[in-house]
Image (cartoon, rainbow, N blue to C red; front, side):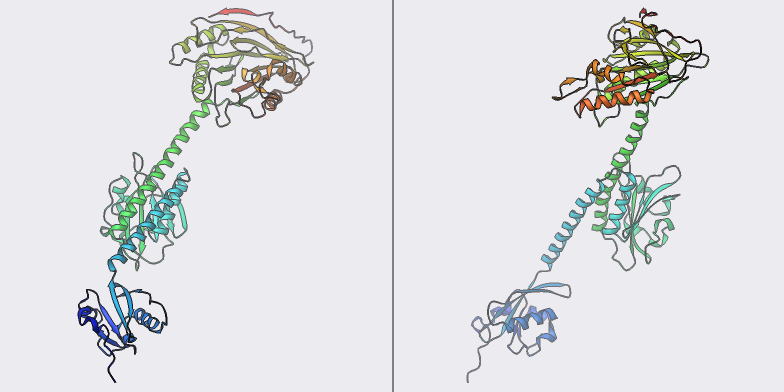
Length: 549
């Protein structure tokens, strides 16, 4: 009987010179032939040796599957042998043998691993940026920074923020547990921390001895001892946002150069978010401080007279605008309280700035409050010499309580004349007029006097009330007649109730439509019995006097 043909006999020994390891496995599962590269890779792969004894298990298993196949072409398989990453391609021969061509794909595997790692890092940075920028709260941003760092970069993380006084705010994370606290920290105790807090590049991690870390730098929840440490700065917008300490336990891989670089990239994102949160807090505090000076004050009873005010900005997102009111109680030894309500040309913050200027100027001119004309003249001069080009209208009301009644001196400077509602519901307009301030060198004004008996109110208001547009088509002015009708229903009410009712009526008329700034002030003599013998008379116009400033 002729012997079975030797595999690849038609090629002679050419396949033995293939640039890749080649193994020929007989149908019996033993090694039939191996070229020099295969012999170098598998030194025990001698002819007659069982394949499972001389090659990795993954290749032996793949051969059994390939030898047992009845149809189709065997699929290539991949696996590792030592430091090698191999891809094995089987070829069946006519005599039942299987030739295994082994291709070294170590470089490709490393490249694929690096690509996967790069994609994971990119995805992490994108997600981290979204989470860090989701809040402008400094504490939440610190918490998110260490939480992400402990989850992806290290076993634990400590964020050291710039000192506040003698203490440094700290955020500490171990796993998903995050703690915020402050401590007295000596940056010199951690190599590189002083430089990191100043924004200088970090020192290599190999220069840091984990055993020398102070207690505050090692989280209590970190199991085991620290084996590797990275300290990196958190750069901010113009100033450092702090420093980040990353820790890995003994037994875990140490930080390599690429991981330290990636930690710096993450720290740059976190530092930018922290810096933005810090700037937001700083600007918020500044705005709150300034806003407290611009917001209308809370009014109260002064010398037995009720004062109440209400303000609504032209935009729901704004708190201040061009309308304002103030009440300045009489100084000791004096008897008149000065109430002011005004309207600056324009809306929003620019108008509010001029509003603040006018209010401060009026505060400085209070010693002149007994002479409305002189006060308005000085205010007009101050506005003309300022860099603002806006003008304002306002009403001055000097208020004095006497004998259970309230006497008012009212002066309008280009503003709607105040309305008075009597106890019987009668509403009439006061007789005062004048020119706006901040336009002409000379202004003219007329002062009138009004007496309010118990339960009677004088209403000061801006044109945002009468010019509020609403109605069925949303284009009809609220107007003075509707204001008078609403005020008639307020006869005998306390000042706060008058303000609330007027605001409610205007809001109902607007029904969500756009509007100008709206401000109202009620000056009311509280209800009660008149002192015996008191018979106050209305002096509207009786004591009116003209003034030129």
